[in-house]
Length: 111
Image (cartoon, rainbow, N blue to C red):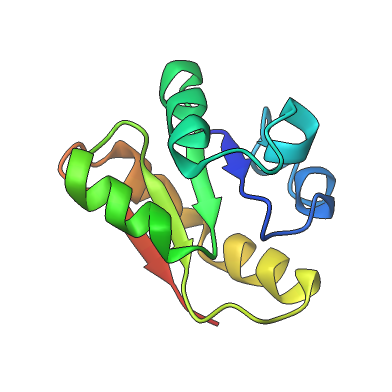
């Protein structure tokens, strides 16, 4: 399970969570910073990433098109990177179950 962190989240999450979610990356590291959500969506879809975002636009994309890719939405997110790290770590089992469930397309996490 590998994540593509959206530009509204810190690049630091890639290295902080590397042991737990290997193969993850950030849109800026992939040259996608400032591109449309649709391009980020297609990138994630073709490379088997799960999008992790604080942006409601991906909620709209996943409910319109369905997976892949799946989306983890950090809703109401205006917190430091350390809290995002803690929330993703503490929900690792829930995230794993979400990834394995072929029926689910969206996981909403709140601080």
